[in-house]
Image (spheres, helix red, strand yellow):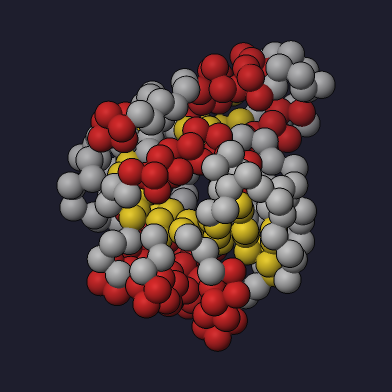
Length: 303
């Protein structure tokens, strides 16, 4: 286990899944106010300014020992198998990390009264009655969504003070992890057509804004909050912005409907989030175009 890095703050924040896409952004943002510790497992990476612990969170004894050693002042649980298809094809092993580990962590944090924030998803909804507020009933359409619902409910049962941040589709550029942008860019670079749904809608948010929103929930200690971006966009509209900003030929973009594609994993049509409660607290995510222009301003990709 690494020794803690020097920090102006004496407060310790533990971030599970620190080497993942969202975990990486959380580590960057949290260092402003916290001494940051993070757990890793599948990615052996270094996150500057963060003390990392290699740990299989599914091992209850190791999880308990790690909490006793670090003695965090708060925990953000971001570790998960977040690929819906992986959960669909292997529900048993993904249940272990997505649900059982979350329940165990809630119980351990309850024992020590450690503030705990769980990272959930907009896929807890079925997409039939958007936009979704925090008070709307959950209704997942795939196993990943079902696991997140089970985790949410079980964590709150074990530790009623558990905070929940429901995240939308996220994007950004991380050295060792990818968002939905990277496969699209790779296909564009190869000159391949992008077939994107014009009838699947999300409220996307950048990794930086997502991390800021989660830290805001932790600061305000505010139950369950939605952290969607300011725009309701279809997959096709997101592709239009990406193609335009990076300067790829527009004809590489092809619109389609969900009904046109045989989906191996059910996908809700519109899980746009109503994030007005978070906005009222100061959450201020940026539009997709603005964030993409900033991400690729110094890129050597075609423009």
